Length: 243
Image 1 (cartoon, rainbow, N blue to C red):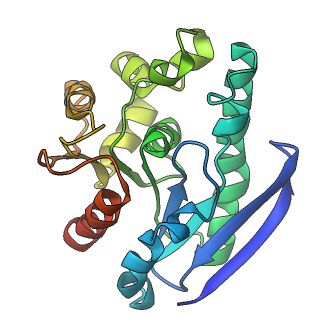
Image 2: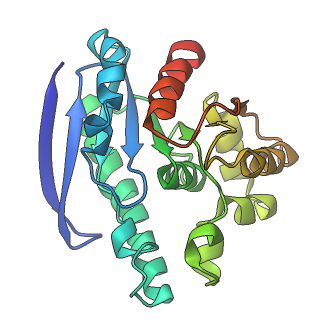
């Protein structure tokens, strides 16, 4: 399997940001790390290895970036308002740097889907919902879609605008709604085992249906817990059966 690592100094984040690429061809899957992890996390936990047959067959090309959670919501020594600022800088990094980089490498017409597990699933969903004009869909695994789960009681306008379960009910802009509704790939999956939150996924699913947004909701059994074996199995299932 072809692997390439590069980096650049991000104007949005004012730091060097690496990105790993796996494969040559196919639609593009942009992986957002869990919690406070880095761009090689999905490789370390054998998820890239699990996807190798699909990557080698040219079905998809995978891109993986660093998270900024340690410099935002998971930095508990940081002023909360500054966490929101850093979060928005991360969003801008993805929209204005990562997406153009992917298109320069994989073609302007290539479909791009964000993907994440745990905290990464919230980011993946949020990135898609805010810019469905440049991102074509999302795979979210074992997530919650309420940012206040991570803000320790802090609330401001920017928390609202990065918390899908809060802003989607009030979204009325026909341009963005039509772009979201046009996606055939909004996949929300979770287990019902240890440390999973199926009810949070059902609540968010209800919010999406309430706006007329088609999506694929998968609630797996009580033996499916919040861990890497789940996400390897889950992502492979979704890519094999839904794409």
